[in-house]
Image (tube, rainbow, N blue to C red; front, side, top):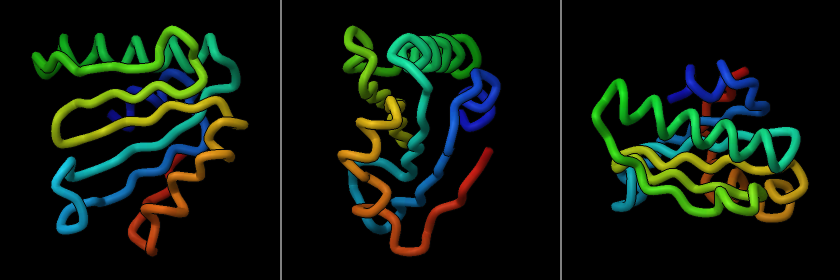
Length: 104
């Protein structure tokens, strides 16, 4: 998943290990796109790759507006934000007590 969003030029990719901290998922990935259009594109391509490569039908919410798209891939939840929306919600602050790995 990290490679997919990186390939699509997502910015500020953060992976958060949720194991032992949440029953919802094992990992959370947070990244940004520069515009609503790019956020929607990153999300759609990730969902397509999950289906093609892993035969997973990920649930997706928010693609219509492109401000914040949530992709539920079971053990991994991916949030793709426009920068302003990401800054407003600041999910990293809520989930990041030193357990994140910053990527690209």
